[in-house]
Image (cartoon, rainbow, N blue to C red; front, side, top):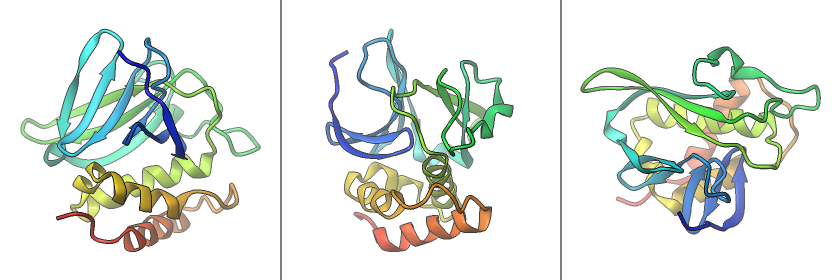
Length: 181
Protein backbone atom coordinates (compact mmCIF):
# COMPACT_ATOMS: atom_id res chain seq x y z
CA UNK A 1 0.00 0.00 0.00
CA UNK A 2 1.51 3.39 -0.92
CA UNK A 3 2.29 5.87 1.79
CA UNK A 4 -0.29 8.63 2.02
CA UNK A 5 0.65 12.17 3.02
CA UNK A 6 -1.43 14.20 5.46
CA UNK A 7 -2.55 17.63 4.28
CA UNK A 8 -2.51 19.10 7.81
CA UNK A 9 -6.24 19.51 8.48
CA UNK A 10 -7.57 17.27 11.25
CA UNK A 11 -10.26 16.69 13.85
CA UNK A 12 -9.21 14.01 16.35
CA UNK A 13 -8.47 10.85 14.33
CA UNK A 14 -9.99 12.40 11.16
CA UNK A 15 -7.57 14.05 8.77
CA UNK A 16 -7.31 15.05 5.14
CA UNK A 17 -4.86 12.75 3.36
CA UNK A 18 -4.09 13.09 -0.35
CA UNK A 19 -7.45 14.74 -0.97
CA UNK A 20 -9.48 12.16 1.00
CA UNK A 21 -10.83 12.34 4.55
CA UNK A 22 -9.54 9.42 6.60
CA UNK A 23 -10.05 8.21 10.18
CA UNK A 24 -6.81 6.65 11.41
CA UNK A 25 -3.11 6.58 10.66
CA UNK A 26 -2.26 5.99 6.99
CA UNK A 27 1.47 6.65 7.37
CA UNK A 28 2.57 3.05 7.93
CA UNK A 29 1.93 0.01 5.74
CA UNK A 30 0.76 -2.13 8.69
CA UNK A 31 -2.17 0.07 9.79
CA UNK A 32 -5.95 0.09 9.51
CA UNK A 33 -7.93 3.19 8.59
CA UNK A 34 -11.37 4.20 7.30
CA UNK A 35 -11.73 6.48 4.26
CA UNK A 36 -14.76 8.69 3.56
CA UNK A 37 -15.50 8.10 -0.13
CA UNK A 38 -18.38 9.28 -2.32
CA UNK A 39 -19.88 5.76 -2.19
CA UNK A 40 -19.43 5.13 1.55
CA UNK A 41 -16.98 4.22 4.30
CA UNK A 42 -14.06 2.16 3.03
CA UNK A 43 -12.17 0.09 5.62
CA UNK A 44 -8.50 -0.39 4.71
CA UNK A 45 -6.18 -2.91 6.28
CA UNK A 46 -2.59 -4.08 5.81
CA UNK A 47 -3.42 -7.36 4.06
CA UNK A 48 -6.77 -6.52 2.53
CA UNK A 49 -8.26 -4.76 -0.48
CA UNK A 50 -10.70 -3.26 1.98
CA UNK A 51 -14.41 -3.36 2.62
CA UNK A 52 -17.00 -0.80 1.52
CA UNK A 53 -19.99 0.16 3.67
CA UNK A 54 -22.39 2.22 1.51
CA UNK A 55 -23.82 5.36 3.11
CA UNK A 56 -27.36 4.08 2.54
CA UNK A 57 -26.79 1.04 4.77
CA UNK A 58 -25.78 3.03 7.86
CA UNK A 59 -28.87 3.58 9.96
CA UNK A 60 -27.95 4.22 13.59
CA UNK A 61 -25.30 6.35 15.19
CA UNK A 62 -21.62 6.17 14.60
CA UNK A 63 -19.62 6.20 17.77
CA UNK A 64 -15.95 5.80 18.53
CA UNK A 65 -14.37 3.57 21.12
CA UNK A 66 -10.75 3.15 22.06
CA UNK A 67 -8.78 -0.04 22.56
CA UNK A 68 -7.10 -2.91 20.80
CA UNK A 69 -10.29 -4.97 20.47
CA UNK A 70 -13.78 -3.97 19.34
CA UNK A 71 -15.29 -5.55 22.44
CA UNK A 72 -13.84 -2.70 24.52
CA UNK A 73 -16.99 -0.63 24.04
CA UNK A 74 -16.76 0.47 27.68
CA UNK A 75 -13.63 2.41 26.69
CA UNK A 76 -15.78 5.06 24.99
CA UNK A 77 -14.63 7.82 27.28
CA UNK A 78 -11.10 7.09 28.48
CA UNK A 79 -9.54 10.54 28.67
CA UNK A 80 -6.73 12.11 30.69
CA UNK A 81 -7.18 14.99 33.11
CA UNK A 82 -5.74 17.25 30.42
CA UNK A 83 -8.57 16.27 28.06
CA UNK A 84 -6.73 13.89 25.76
CA UNK A 85 -7.66 10.37 24.62
CA UNK A 86 -5.84 8.15 27.11
CA UNK A 87 -5.32 4.90 25.23
CA UNK A 88 -2.88 4.43 22.34
CA UNK A 89 -3.97 0.95 21.23
CA UNK A 90 -6.24 2.00 18.37
CA UNK A 91 -9.88 2.72 17.87
CA UNK A 92 -13.14 1.50 16.38
CA UNK A 93 -16.03 3.11 14.54
CA UNK A 94 -19.24 1.35 15.57
CA UNK A 95 -22.51 1.53 13.63
CA UNK A 96 -25.68 -0.40 12.89
CA UNK A 97 -26.43 -1.29 9.27
CA UNK A 98 -29.66 -2.21 7.49
CA UNK A 99 -30.43 -4.87 4.85
CA UNK A 100 -29.50 -7.09 6.59
CA UNK A 101 -29.47 -5.57 10.06
CA UNK A 102 -26.08 -5.95 11.70
CA UNK A 103 -23.71 -4.19 14.03
CA UNK A 104 -20.36 -3.41 12.42
CA UNK A 105 -17.05 -2.18 13.81
CA UNK A 106 -14.46 -0.60 11.55
CA UNK A 107 -10.94 -0.61 12.95
CA UNK A 108 -8.47 2.25 12.75
CA UNK A 109 -4.98 2.72 14.16
CA UNK A 110 -4.18 5.87 16.06
CA UNK A 111 -1.65 8.44 14.96
CA UNK A 112 1.48 9.12 17.00
CA UNK A 113 -0.02 12.52 17.86
CA UNK A 114 -2.50 12.67 20.75
CA UNK A 115 -6.19 13.41 20.17
CA UNK A 116 -8.04 16.05 22.14
CA UNK A 117 -11.23 14.76 23.76
CA UNK A 118 -13.22 17.73 22.49
CA UNK A 119 -12.16 17.05 18.89
CA UNK A 120 -13.06 13.35 18.97
CA UNK A 121 -16.40 14.06 20.61
CA UNK A 122 -17.19 16.83 18.12
CA UNK A 123 -16.42 14.40 15.29
CA UNK A 124 -18.71 11.81 16.83
CA UNK A 125 -21.55 14.32 17.23
CA UNK A 126 -21.09 15.50 13.64
CA UNK A 127 -21.45 11.91 12.42
CA UNK A 128 -24.56 11.39 14.55
CA UNK A 129 -26.14 14.63 13.38
CA UNK A 130 -25.57 13.71 9.74
CA UNK A 131 -27.33 10.38 10.32
CA UNK A 132 -30.21 12.06 12.16
CA UNK A 133 -30.62 14.54 9.29
CA UNK A 134 -30.33 11.84 6.59
CA UNK A 135 -27.24 13.53 5.14
CA UNK A 136 -24.47 11.04 5.90
CA UNK A 137 -23.56 10.98 2.19
CA UNK A 138 -22.09 14.48 2.64
CA UNK A 139 -19.04 12.78 4.17
CA UNK A 140 -18.14 11.72 0.63
CA UNK A 141 -17.84 15.39 -0.41
CA UNK A 142 -14.24 16.36 0.41
CA UNK A 143 -14.87 20.10 0.30
CA UNK A 144 -18.00 19.89 2.44
CA UNK A 145 -16.18 17.88 5.12
CA UNK A 146 -13.38 20.45 5.05
CA UNK A 147 -15.84 23.27 5.76
CA UNK A 148 -17.51 21.31 8.57
CA UNK A 149 -14.17 20.38 10.14
CA UNK A 150 -13.01 24.01 9.95
CA UNK A 151 -16.05 24.93 12.09
CA UNK A 152 -15.25 22.28 14.70
CA UNK A 153 -11.48 22.54 15.20
CA UNK A 154 -9.77 24.69 17.74
CA UNK A 155 -11.15 26.29 20.83
CA UNK A 156 -10.87 25.15 24.39
CA UNK A 157 -10.69 21.49 25.30
CA UNK A 158 -13.85 21.91 27.32
CA UNK A 159 -17.60 22.34 26.81
CA UNK A 160 -18.11 18.60 26.58
CA UNK A 161 -21.77 18.56 27.53
CA UNK A 162 -24.12 16.79 25.15
CA UNK A 163 -25.96 20.04 24.56
CA UNK A 164 -22.78 21.95 23.63
CA UNK A 165 -21.52 19.13 21.39
CA UNK A 166 -24.88 18.84 19.60
CA UNK A 167 -24.99 22.62 19.12
CA UNK A 168 -21.47 22.59 17.64
CA UNK A 169 -22.47 19.83 15.18
CA UNK A 170 -25.63 21.68 14.12
CA UNK A 171 -23.66 24.90 13.62
CA UNK A 172 -21.02 23.06 11.57
CA UNK A 173 -23.73 21.60 9.33
CA UNK A 174 -25.28 25.01 8.80
CA UNK A 175 -21.95 26.69 8.10
CA UNK A 176 -20.74 23.94 5.75
CA UNK A 177 -23.86 24.39 3.61
CA UNK A 178 -25.89 21.92 1.56
CA UNK A 179 -22.96 20.18 -0.18
CA UNK A 180 -22.70 19.09 -3.79
CA UNK A 181 -25.91 17.73 -5.37
